[in-house]
Length: 121
Image (cartoon, rainbow, N blue to C red):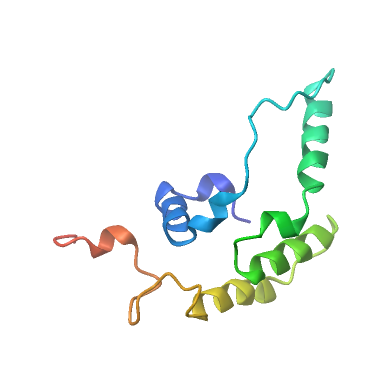
């Protein structure tokens, strides 16, 4: 299981650089205005609010595979085991589609940005 904390800033910058449309989701102020008694109740209401946003709105400017991924993962129950090979295939399809692929022809998809800097050892 990959946790968000395991992603490095270079991973996030790669996503922001190569998929800038992901960040174009309209954002509201961080203040939710939700009146609650406990943190547990607060986070439950925030979770429900996030779940209520339609996938079409979230993925408006993204490749269609993002919508497929979110639809699949939202339908999973806690005890269900995800079909990881199918999920990996979804994102592999994005990278193989020339209109969505952020790589230049012949560029290695496994090479980090800093490895392209002249003099990097």
